[in-house]
Length: 197
Image 1 (cartoon, helix red, strand yellow):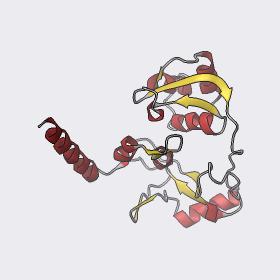
Image 2 (cartoon, rainbow, N blue to C red):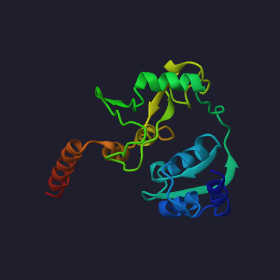
Image 3 (cartoon, rainbow, N blue to C red):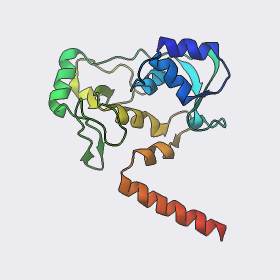
Image 4 (cartoon, rainbow, N blue to C red):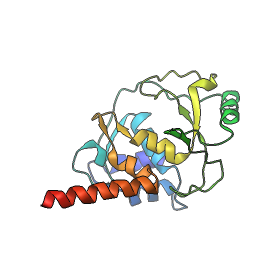
């Protein structure tokens, strides 16, 4: 995260493509699977304003912009569950991702390959109530935490843009099953065909 912070602060008000951010985050090694999480921490934990295409400033998908080096007031320090609480969460979860969508659970396990997002699955703690709403989650209470894979951690953040109050439709479709993507594709194909006539 430190490398990304320095990188952004030395190139203020300049568009930065996703590939360049990943290059800095990887420090010349392999692409880190959690570079997007480091970026999110700069925004939420550190209080820096880093804009993306979801912020409505004319940025394209995969472009980021840090307007200035000012830090916003933060809601509170991000906490994590204690080791005993996290062990209970993993036991309850069966050491698998607890993301539930319409009654269908993700259930990807630590170390498996994510068939949709790619990369090796690493389960991480997620606040049952968003950090921005309840920043004082009890680190000893397993009921306040759940285990999520990296893809669903990102999806949870990206489904809703709290700054604009709008759904991030792109992220929702990206995370959908192939069957649902085909339904959306047909809907859009019909919409644009009808709008031309």
